[in-house]
Image 1 (cartoon, one colour):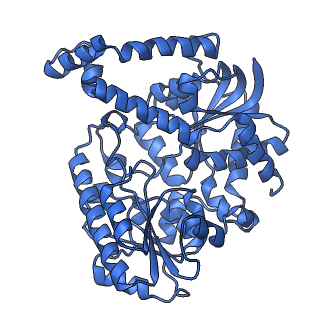
Image 2 (cartoon, helix red, strand yellow):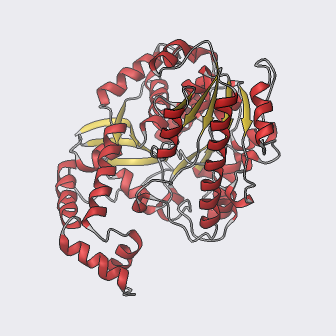
Image 3 (spheres, helix red, strand yellow):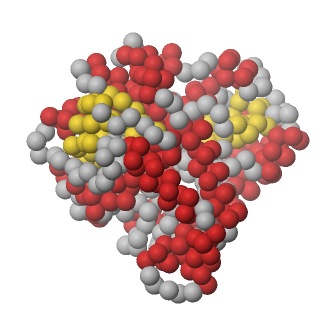
Length: 456
């Protein structure tokens, strides 16, 4: 069993990997050891048995997410939640109903990284998380726009050349946040909050309107390049591919982390993506598109008090605005409330919190892993997966759907679907694709860590 000070268990490569690599570089420079595990890969592959002082997880909303991520550490003493999803729709923040982002169970005894006072206050007041488990440290992704990390950006010349773009043309970037439009049903967040239909309609209507604006602008402004940056959870839509085929200056791109595109493009457009915070600190010319009036419940506090473009004529005015003109729709006060700003880099603030947790005798975490090794865990879970694929289980799912049997196993199947082998295979293919997109070995990640050590 390999002993390590900090074991990072990450989920989404584009969202997390560089951030935790930078954090690990700082911790290693302070004398600590680190290791990395990708949760998608570890679900069905045997990984090393780690004995970690601190397990650093992607999320920890409740006892279920806690046990899911921590099971990839055979032994551990403490848990820290990086909490990569902190800026939520107003409807989730304000609703008394049950949502996927509610905190309960073991999460109430876990240390959480908070990007700003907004998150800290929500967890304290709504879920009664003790203040000593919450630490406002800022948001690490915003650190990459600091001068010392300039060399980490892919140059505009290389980025554009690799993606068939002209470096000499003015280029606008639209950051899509139209998520959950193509995900398998079983992977979508579940909630008792009653604005899901309102949200779904706003996504569909706004996506269509913005695509129509971009299609029209492509023809009116042939010398401007239009990039549609798909959301990580947004599958390639046929109408976007059609736009790309019909317009030489329209590109639907999803490769490379968003920060490279933000720094390479001239004008940045948003709908409700929280990438707006990165655009804010980048200093780029920025706009929010709101072709369809949004219900308060499906917007974010970050976008309150800001100006948005509501008509096609307003969109045209933004395209014609000189590149040296300032345009920033995010309110400074709300930005600092949601994302704490400091002269000290955020990765160092988080590292201070990690170091404090490491040495503290006050924080201890429970290990619910019932297996003595990762091999034993994988073997057991593979047996369960084999049963889940079985025709008998599919039959049970169909019975659960057709009846109102309240037994927990039937309720679980009724809520999670999988009423046909086709749906089972689709979900398995989804999991497989996530592994392929997100996995890097510990050695490959440590090469990135070493690169950061040379910069900090």
